[in-house]
Length: 136
Ligand code: NI
Image 1 (tube, rainbow, N blue to C red):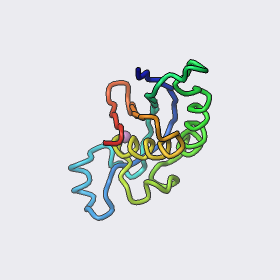
Image 2 (image 1 turned 120 degrees about the vertical axis):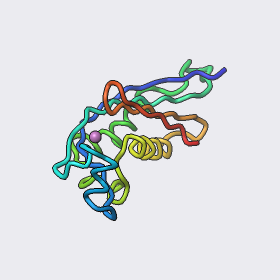
Image 3 (image 1 turned 90 degrees about the vertical axis):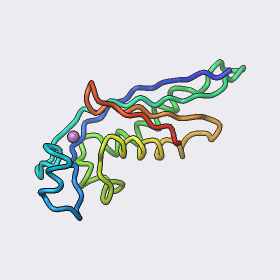
């Protein structure tokens, strides 16, 4: 019997979508306003979903406090109020699209979790635009 525990979190961050190896015109054509050289911000909403068996002793799949602390140290402390392109090493040479941010978040949380758990990341870049990633 598998049950999924979800933890919501939030961070504000700035980014610019572009490739250094493309001209400004090509970046503008592909990324539009997101290629603004002065960056722009988003209020990112994160949902980390952990699936596993219920521990018969505790009744928990995972103690949410553990998940909360991992998100705090690995994601919020690293990303909140940061310029992702400039201040977060993972995006030095990786375009900080919602897709790539979700993969980085997945990788950072996954290594901190017991390997018995299945992890899925849902990342909202805007209230209407969101991506999911679960390691496949
Ligand atoms: Ni953007």
